[in-house]
Structure formats: C-alpha cells, structure tokens
Amino acid sequence: MGDPQTNGKPLTEDSRLRLLEHFSGEGPPPNDRWSTLWDAGDFLPWDQGRPNPALTDVMQDRQDLVGSSPLVAENGELRRKRAFVPGCGRGYDVLLLASLGYDAYGLEVSTTAVEKAQAWAEEHAADYPIRDETVGRGKAKFILGDFFGNEWIQQADGVDKFEFIYDYTFFCALSPELRPAWALRLWDLLSTHHDSLIVCVEFPTFKKLFFGGPPYAAPSSAYLTHLGNPGKKVWYDFEGGAMVSQDEELGQGIGFRRIDHWKAARSHEMGKGTDWVSVWKRSI
Ligand SMILES: C[S@@+](CC[C@H](N)C(=O)[O-])C[C@H]1O[C@@H](n2cnc3c(N)ncnc32)[C@H](O)[C@@H]1O
Image (tube, rainbow, N blue to C red; front, side):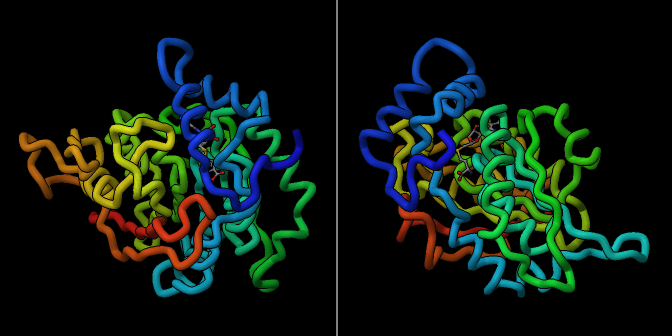
C-alpha cells in the first residue's frame, strides 16, 4: 500500500469505533498496536495525504511568532533551526518544514511508517518546493523510536534539542495517563534558545474524554494544563476540562506559556471548524 488511505476525509464513526476496538482490551502495548496498523497499511484513517493547512498558515502568516527565517545564530554562526515532529506518520509536515529551510526530524515508533515516510519523501519531493532559494531546503530525516525513550537521539544527529516542535494528532494518540510525561518530555526537548517554540494543532477539541480513543479528547484546557505544568498530575472533569490536581502547587516550577491561541481558519477535514492552534514558549 503505497498511498494514503484518505485525503482530506473526515474521521468517520466506523473508523473511530475500529480504532477504539484496536487499542482496547488486554494485549500488546500501544506502540506495537500502532505498528500493526502501519504494517497492514489498509486502515490509516488519520492519514490525510498532505501537510496540515493549519501549519502552512502558521508558517506563512504568523512570522511574528515563528520568525521570518529558519536560521538561528549559534556561536556567532548561522545554522538551520532544528524542527521536531513526534508521531509524524507519513511525514507530510516534516517535508513542509524542510521545504521552508528547517532541518526537520520526524519520529515514528513504527518501522513501516518510517519506510513509508522515506518513500513518500523520495517520490513527492516536487510537491514541496523550496520556499526561499537563498536559504534552500533543510534535511528531512525520518527516525525510528519511542518519543519517551532516548535511543533515537543518535539518529537525530546526536542532538536532543529542537528550536521548533510541532504536535498534530500525537497528543491525542497517547493514552491520557501519558500526558504529564508528554509535556515533561517536550520540556526536555525544546531548546532553551529564546526563539524556540512549540506549535500544537489541537484535535479533537470537540470530543469528550469518556468516548475513549485514540484519538483521545483534546480540549484546549488539556494542552493548557499539561503544557503549563509538565510532569504534574492532572484530573479531568466530566466535560473533559483539565485541571492540575489540587495537591499540586499551580504556577510553581517549570512550565510552558501559551503565547497565542486561535481557531484554525483551515485544517484537515476531520478537524475543520474545531481545530485550534496554540503556540508555546518556555516560561524560563
Ligand atoms: C494519529 S497518528 C498521526 C500521524 C501524523 N501526525 C499525521 O497527522 O498523519 C499518531 C502516530 O504516532 C505514532 N506514535 C504513537 N506513539 C508513539 C510514540 N510513543 N513514539 C513515536 N511515535 C508514536 C503512531 O505510530 C502514529 O503514526
């Protein structure tokens, strides 16, 4: 199966139920279950066949946030910013970032997904033209590993810091118990350079947590609470709103600051009209 199963299609009720079933009950850990889906290749309902238009719009229209250049000064020299896309799937967003001049790294827990991303990059290079000839194209590298582990850092050219991190349908792919660790891991991976930021395209903001997942409910309050309090225990109310546990001290210690938040004018079909974009910086 060389091609995406969907292109701009909504996540149907049938697909949602099939995903829920696939990830439910006793059996292999979630990472293996993702790999099973990629290996079979005939049910990849999240795969939209192109970069998320919401990311395209951020990079094009919000240079006040992301900067006008993919280059950063280090030790008196300019180098490409390093972009990181965890759970990148077939890697469309990675290819977009590389075309803008970033050195872009897409991480996947599935060997087959990495292979499919590499093949897509080779076959579709012309679909990702260089935006600025003076800057050129950055590298697009697809690497195999578990986001929560360290074994993949070597493949990311041995550097575990990134100036730009993009999350789309990775947060919602993880079981909610992993969210404190997700935010803490991002804290470790985001470079301390003052230009560094995280962009999240929030999906599915409309879903209630009791429906299960993946995709698990991802209201804006969940991003706000977890990223504002990496590693801290969070509880969710019946409506899916997220709050830090009352025994934790709010606003203490490390945390990301949301510097902007807006409803995406364009996004993939499955999040159209409900996806939000949030942009985050380190508080310290
Ligand atoms: C819902 S899909 C989204 C893929 C991609 N972002 C897209 O929009 O097409 C989530 C992806 O995360 C990957 N994934 C899940 N858990 C992971 C982990 N712990 N580390 C790395 N990748 C993971 C899965 O293999 C899957 O391809």
